[in-house]
Amino acid sequence: MNRLSRDPVALLEAAREGQRIALARLMSLVERGGDEARLVGAQTYSQVGGAYTVGMTGAPGSGKSSLTAALASVVRSEDERLAILAIDPSSPFTGGAILGDRVRMQEHVTDDGIYIRSMATRGHLGGLSLATPQAIRVLDALGWPWVLVETVGVGQVEVDIAAAADTTIVVVNPGWGDAVQANKAGLMEVADIFVINKADRKGVDETRRDIQQMLELSSLGDWEPPILMTVATDQIGVDELWEKVGEHREYLEKCGELEARRTRRVDAELTEIVNRSLEKKVIATMDRPETAELKEKLMRGEIDPYAAAAQLIDMAEGLN
Image (cartoon, rainbow, N blue to C red):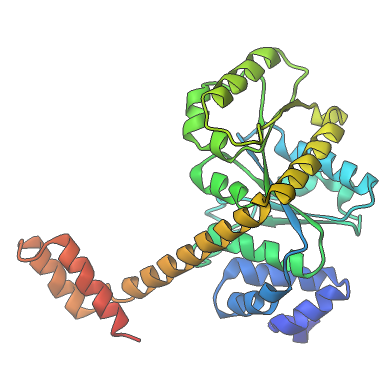
């Protein structure tokens, strides 16, 4: 396997043969980014389209990992294979992802029909916003029919990652707090299914009412997000959740929205790659003597910021 460690093509071949360590190394390449990650992307891009992705987001402590583990049990009971990406945009000290998700999913670790990967950005150009779709494509190209992407919070980065899925599940708890703040976080816009987890606690009815009121004030299409109750630790309501995922998939396929969503995601990813590539080029000019002179002119008021930015871009393009 050592000879495969830096050869994406060989790693893909080994991963197709079922070698989990090869798949793990492919994911590490994707996380790190750079030329090797781009080569992985080039090798997998034409081989995708079979996987269906499910995003799961919600506030920390809402029980997403427990719900993911419970959902995995339902998926496996139907003899389906599931890959799980547990996304952690934080971990600034180690550069690695928190492994608590794997601890909670311990019962599935030895199951060949389940693949669990904790991911964090490690200097990737564009961070997880670009690493995540690439990781999904790797799994797709390797034949995983279902990919579940779980994020650790409800910030904009996490919401964007969850929204990169075909079906997005938003998990809340009874007494979830200010619905207006949740709406600002973008949850109402990305949610295809709402789950009130830990539904054995007080405040369930009030939480359901709050969500329903927010939905009534939103501009909904033909699909109205259902509001489900679960107790993930007791496997309560999880079967119904999986059924709703299937219903939403059927709805998207029938009305043509699935293809439209995927087209929008490709457009957004292309725009992000272009933006990040230009940003990288411009940053490379910041230590040049010409840039220092430009900054001095800016400070003296001899040039305005937009004109200075235009010159920096021209300078970056001249480095090609």
